[in-house]
Image (cartoon, rainbow, N blue to C red; front, side, top):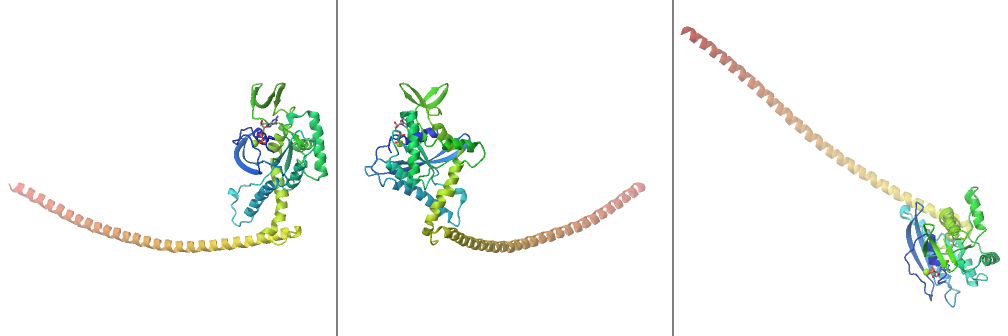
Length: 362
Ligand code: GDP
Ligand code: MG
């Protein structure tokens, strides 16, 4: 609901002040807005989309308030489903817009979960990983919080609502950590946009006349745990569970829409395989057509090359012929010049003889 601390929490989680209108006005209808941010989280580039639902719980008649949110989650699944069935899907430009985690904020002062929240959680928990948090937990005492947490868990249990639980099937340290985290759900968190200098560091705080609440301090709230599990340890698991759990569920329920016949579980994989086979055949047909076009092109190119080669040969031979003719001409010229030179030399010799004769006679 408006003012529960949604924007402040998201800003605190990603250590930014995202651009958005600061205060939600109580709204007449539930609206959803999405923004995408490129973040760098300890050296890892992160593409984060945040969808805010505004006005849920603000109406006098709350019963239908959850519908726009449920429809939104389904629409994202549907987008993915449509992409999956496109024969020429381009995986590189394919952006996964499904909702991988839903932070559901409860008011801190509740005696128990409000019925509107129970109804909403029932609808949402079959579609998306729910991470339940108690907002503004700095406004209630620790013992009250512990009691509240326990009552929440009991009520969820009574209504058969399953929250996202952290994976504990690995044998490593993460599994141990997750086991601890599971026992502390729902997280009681604090958010803030105000920063202060504590021990030489800029940290997010809430300042009160009697002291300071540090957002990142584990002794003050469960916020650091939420941050750790959401961004570091379990991001992969959230994505995996969305795909293999919630999305799979959606897909099975929507197979009839795609003209695949009934939606009974047993026929789903059959229908899926049939559709895949159709696409495979279509793909092969296109590939064969492309291959043939290619072969034809190569043939064209071949004859073109042959023609070009022939021309080149002819030109070369002609040039060679010309060169040979020139060479012959040169040789003839050479011969001619040689004989002429010979004649001149002979004439010179004769001339010299005549001169000697002349001297003697003188
Ligand atoms: P939104 O309408 O749900 O987005 O709520 P906002 O994030 O805009 O917060 C509404 C008001 O609650 C603001 O004045 C916040 O400073 C305040 N607020 C947010 N988080 C906390 C918190 O953890 N503790 C307290 N005491 N106040 C908070
Ligand atoms: Mg807001």
